[in-house]
Image (cartoon, rainbow, N blue to C red; front, side, top):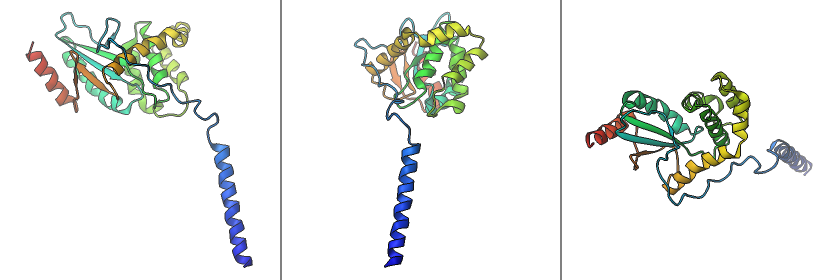
Length: 221
């Protein structure tokens, strides 16, 4: 009987210790770090707008490829070399457009988009776009804010940091990102990357598949 009581007391002590560790180590503040939900869909949703960020700007564009992306999305990161290759191959004929669609589940997706938009205000969107994707493994999927990391990238790119800081904090930057998100929501974008070719949604599986889609659309012109 004494032995059974001793075992019971040991188990209760272990449970209490584990519970105490959980309460001590669990994140404070509940959902304070949970990113905001997506904005409501745009009534006049468009795949591309006049102020959308163009990664290529051919003199005579024959086709427009739009990507709704999240800089923290691993699938977007995996597709980045594909898009880079296609831009180099078709950039003289095809306009490639990047649009923001940071997802609520990614803790640094929104701040990465703000960093890109702040860089865009200094004419360096393309460089920040590439930097965020090529370094994604270093900061993506982190539970900690990575704003300082993104500011470091801005410094590496030679941006005016005072202006960068002001633009990151400017509510108009968040509004600009939300504009893309609202268009994406209105076009039934539910995940990233999502692609549109001349306004029609496509689902390429990789480089060869996407190349075939572009070649076919160019042949129809």
